[in-house]
Image 1 (cartoon, rainbow, N blue to C red):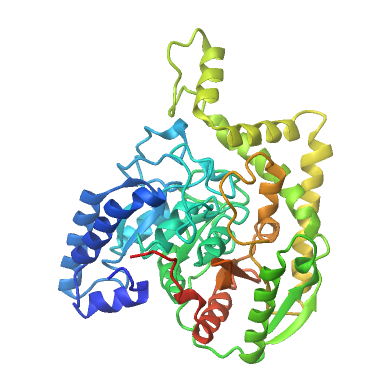
Image 2 (cartoon, rainbow, N blue to C red):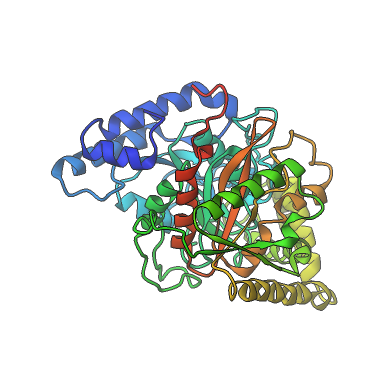
Length: 484
C-alpha cells in the first residue's frame, strides 16, 4: 500500500479498494517500525490521524468528498497545527502547542486530508543538511551516512522511505528543492505569494514559501490544487484564482522554449551531476522542446546577497523569542537582562545564533547601507536577469544541487561550504519565482536533481514539463535501497 502514489491513493479510496483508516494505519505502523533509522518525524499523531481517517471514510461513504479526502500526509514542523506541538526543531519551542492551524493545514483539513505527524527539519529552517535540529539529524534513506538535505530533510526522508506518500515543506533558499534532489523526489516551491504563509513560523518573511515534496509531478499538482489559496490573513498572499494544476499535465512540450544558463555549468558543479543534467536536457529536446543558451550574469552574487538579507529578516523575526511571551524560559533569572540572555542562549542552536548575529550586525547603525541596502539592490538585479531571460524562453533548466548527498559532518565546520550547497536555488527565492526539482539519475547510487524554473505563477507549465519528463524516464520510480 505504501507503494501507491497520491494519484493512486485518490483513485483507490474512490473505488473503495481500501479505506482511509486502512491506509493511515499502514503508514502509522511503518513509522513506528522504521523511523528509528531515519529520525524523519519529530511528532507522530496516531490518535488524531485515525480520528481524521474515520471522518474521511464517512465523507467518502456519503459520496460528496473532495478529491484528496482520506489521503494521509505529513506536515513539516514549521506549520502550526491546533493542539499539536509545533517546535520548528528547536529547544526554544519544544513545549509549544499551537493554538491554531496554519492556513495550508486548514486547507488540507477542510479537504479531508489526514495528518500522520510533524516532520523533522533544520532548526527554524536554517540549514542545508538537517543537521541543526535539536532532535538530532535526519538520515537519507538512500545512504544513511549522508544528509537528506535541508531544511525540509524530515519531509524528504519520510517520503523517500515511504513513511508518508507526500509531505508539506518550506523553501527560503532551496529547502524544498535541495532535499528533493538529494532524496530522489519531486519538490515544488511555488511563486512567492501563491500559497499563504499564515501560521508558518517565519525565518525570512520576504523569502519563505510553502510547498510540497512528493514522488511525482502529478502528485505535486494534485496537492497544490488544495494548498494554494488567497488568504486575507497573509498580506503577502496574492489575490489570484487557483487553476487546476492537473489539467495541462499531458500537454505536449512541442514549441516550449527552455533556457540553459551558462553560469550554472561552471566551477563547483560535480562533473557526473553535470553529465546527468545534460542528458536530461536532451530528453527535453526529444520531447519537442527547443533548447536555448541564456545568461544570468548576477548568479555569483546570489549567495552573498541572500546571506545578508535572510539573516537580517531572521534577526527581526526571532526577536519575539525572549523568554517572556512563549517558548523556552531559563530557570531563576536574576533580572530581565539575564532572562533574555539565558533564555535565548539556551533555546537557540549555534546556526540560529550565527544568523541572528550576522543579521543584527547587517541592520545596525553604520552598516545598514554598506550591507543590507546593497544586498537588496543586488536582489533587484538578480530578478531582472530572470525577467530578461524569460523574454527569450518559457522555462529555465539546470542542476538543483552541485553534487549528490554528502556525508554527515563533512561541511558543518565550514558554514560557507554549506551555504554554497544552495548556489543554484537561492536566486529564485530572491526573485520570488516558482521552481521545482525532479530526479534525473544516480551518481554513486545517490540521486541527482534537475531544476526547472518558471516565470511568475507558471506552476502549471513547470508541472507539465516535469510530468512529461517523468513519463519519458524512470528516475522518479527508483526506490532507495533497503526500503521495505
